Length: 429
Image (cartoon, rainbow, N blue to C red):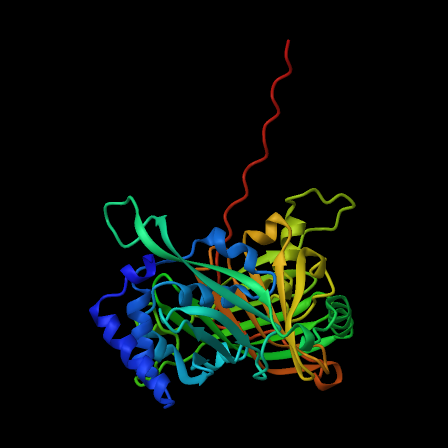
């Protein structure tokens, strides 16, 4: 009853038109369907973070966020810019397939199947497709609950109003034909063994950083040279942005993200020092490794130095994952996989890691057990960093040699003077 109260004359004409197409057996007009969906969803209350937490076990944070957007108010223009669409009907039921236009998104999931209710034209089931185009063994069932008292974020005066709310739950589908998900314990063991076997590595990558608050995408390209156990260089260069370059990521209002070059950076380390260089300023800082001590209190600079001199901090999940307890600091699950690659999802366990990472997704090559791409989501979900690895060569394919970058023309920042030693307090008389 409440759902019908939200259907106005404009939606009614669209619904009648789409239903007529369905009855006639013709292919549905995708644009008309999306606009009918937009009008019907205008009264939907967005899902809250608390309602989404329980759905993270079978879907990545990026997928849960996408499902939440599709369950709330949508804009047809935004969805058309973000996805390419096809519509089919089976036994009178309307189904849409959305394929992300962004190839980076398609690296993690290739599409979303959306089943719409015949009467309300609101989603009743969402199902993600893995990168190979295969359906997931689990789907997100959507139940539209009407008449729920929710605060309306669009109003300026606060308070609440009766709005259509979407409640979602995970359901198993095609249980008899459920895809065989690799055992996560074996996957982690293979990944660790491959990481442990790396003595030298050269990695070339493209880095994409998305700021959802300001709608900005930054691009950069870089390299990592790693020599086990404590030598390496990480270099990021700003990618040039041409006048015709446009971001494939869209904001909720339908406009594309602003495209910017990332900031160049350079870090290299060995068993003596860590050097952080700033190419734009032609300057660098140098941190000398402290002497080893048999006692390492929490918060000591020695621990901080080893954290700085770790590729796991600069490029989490790329190299060195067998050291520093990296594997044990996350709760891992296999999201999906096939005979060529699989996607791991890691959620940090320790308080220290949770300050920097909310979720880490890693695409692993099932032959080499080395990463092909990573996606890092910091706390709050307002930023996202995607790393696409173009080159990953190891050991004999990486000739040893002089790998330190040339810092001629750079000046060293003056270190802050050390504090004078504390004076002893006079003995009490």
